[in-house]
Length: 199
Ligand SMILES: Nc1nc2c(ncn2[C@@H]2O[C@H](COP(=O)(O)OP(=O)(O)OP(=O)(O)O)[C@@H](O)[C@H]2O)c(=O)[nH]1
Ligand SMILES: [Mg+2]
Image 1 (cartoon, helix red, strand yellow):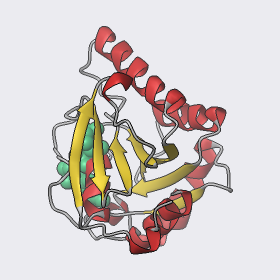
Image 2 (spheres, rainbow, N blue to C red):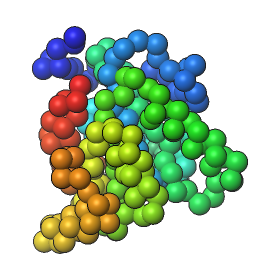
Image 3 (cartoon, rainbow, N blue to C red):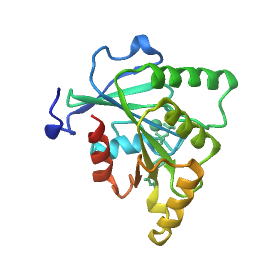
Image 4 (cartoon, rainbow, N blue to C red):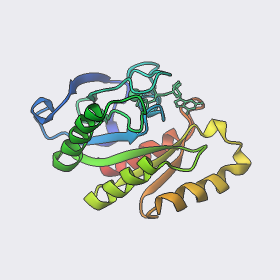
């Protein structure tokens, strides 16, 4: 069992990109996956937690990440950046491929410890967000809900937005709820606390 009190988060690198399980890393290191709509800030979340500018590729163009990207952290655990959903300009066929790829990972991956589910704090969660959260709950996968882009919501409105997000998701209060901003590096400590709990 690795000692996570000495996790060197600066020792991080992209390990590999995978389209299916035959390409996943073959060991038993614990993994935390990132899920959320295209452009919600998954890659930015990874960069922010690892204190890196552009380790995980970010883009203002949605739908950039098409494969499961595995990031090695200090040879002790991994972040898995999952391609975003809800991007309109994707063919039916692509969408189906995406669905199979995600389900294969979420359902069959023994290494998976928890999913960081990202939603945009500015808006009510979309139907896709609700479906993803329900799917994770159905699978019994622990969820760390991260409400991102909080820098774009005035702080006085945070309680109102938090209530709206939780209501729409039928949020399970035993899951973590973290108000986050990659831009302001806000919520980083809480996010790490939540992640480490599952490693
Ligand atoms: N203001 C603000 N912008 C953010 C934040 N997080 C991400 N962004 C911006 O949102 C855009 C998308 O961020 P990404 O991290 O690439 O989003 P993603 O979820 O990885 O997107 P895909 O890989 O396409 O699924 C970029 O322009 C980021 O700079 C945040 O906390 N605040
Ligand atoms: Mg991305």
